[in-house]
Image (cartoon, rainbow, N blue to C red; front, side, top):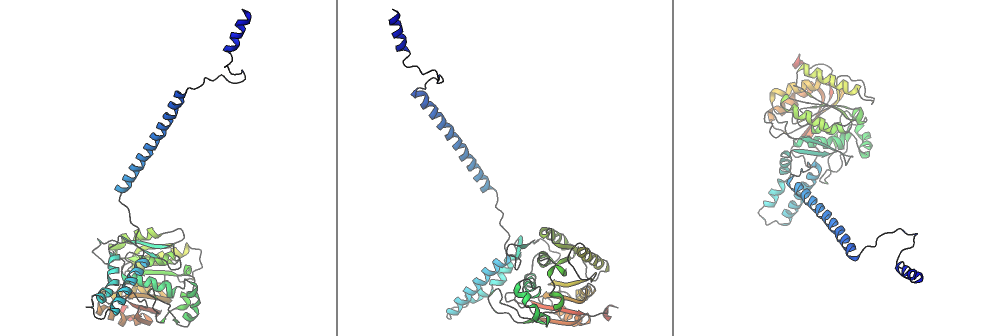
Length: 388
């Protein structure tokens, strides 16, 4: 009996694990399958949740209006010039046509500037700094004055100063020698055409590094020109009438950087208190900078204005303001369109009483058709008799 019981005990323990292994109950095939199916269901559920989340996100993105980036002036200009060239070549090859292509080619640039004027914001890419743009907001609801949009002359004068006056590029610095003699040779324009040679006044001051220059913009409007010069490093004061001042202040803040020196102020031409505030603003900007700016307190090296001659009654106050805020080495650049023929002629008549050197000629920028550049230098040392 003892031997039989021992055999039965041995047969009963034949399938047992050795004592050195943990006693884990074996899983049946059905249990394993259920666990695998449960894991797959869980993964599938997580996948469905992710798909649902993506679908919700896509729906929200589609419902949210996309904000288009402000157009860059140079990009739009290149496209308009290319379109004009295509239309002109088509007109030249089709002499038997009715001339519609030629008329359309002539309207490419005017329509281009009209489209820019209707944009909420406009950007201008700085020369020599491809990734840096000046950006301004336009106020098309501003009807009390013309300072709500960027006019063609502002683009034209900014381009001219960058390429031919401030010597920002290596080629511009190389041209400083010829500029010191009173002339500067202009390079190729945006359309590929060769520009003409034009005098560059007050070259001794303009050949200084841009961070040593002080700039005043009168009638700044949206402030594109002043912001371009400020982003290049000039200490810049931008001025406007009260009606357009809020938008100008906002644009100056929009373009402000840690290293820029820009300020916007109200300036009514000929107003002594406003002129005093502009003088103080200039001096505070210079005092806050570490650059070595020559001591010409209360006056500016470069004074600029675009489309600021449009009424006879404002010509003398404008010249008075420019004279009081300039010195004997200052240069005044006015980019104008003949919007008022009598006011334009009055400017050219009165200007020699304030400045000894007056030069006026078409703006040497091929795409700025109809724009005229007036440069005033060699400020007279005494106040003109018309003001005494």
